[in-house]
Image (cartoon, rainbow, N blue to C red; front, top):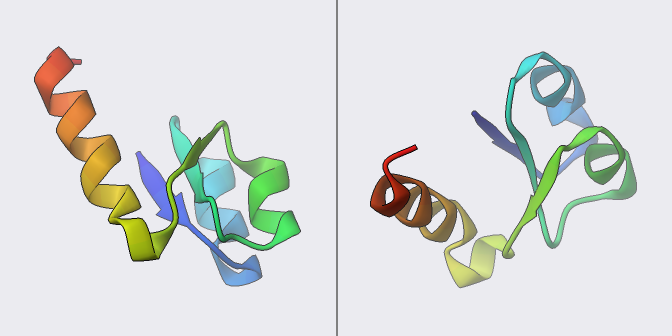
Amino acid sequence: MAFGDSENDVEMLEMAGIAYAMENADDKAKAVATALAPANSQGGVYQVLENWLEKGE
């Protein structure tokens, strides 16, 4: 699982099995992501991880 928001994160997102682009990410990061997370300013990484852990996935 990886999280990214800019062009320098594209390679990492492409390699991740589950790739989240942040809501405030640039278009290149969003294009390669498999899912969208809330913006950094909204605690997006925390929200996704909390949800993932609660579901036991």
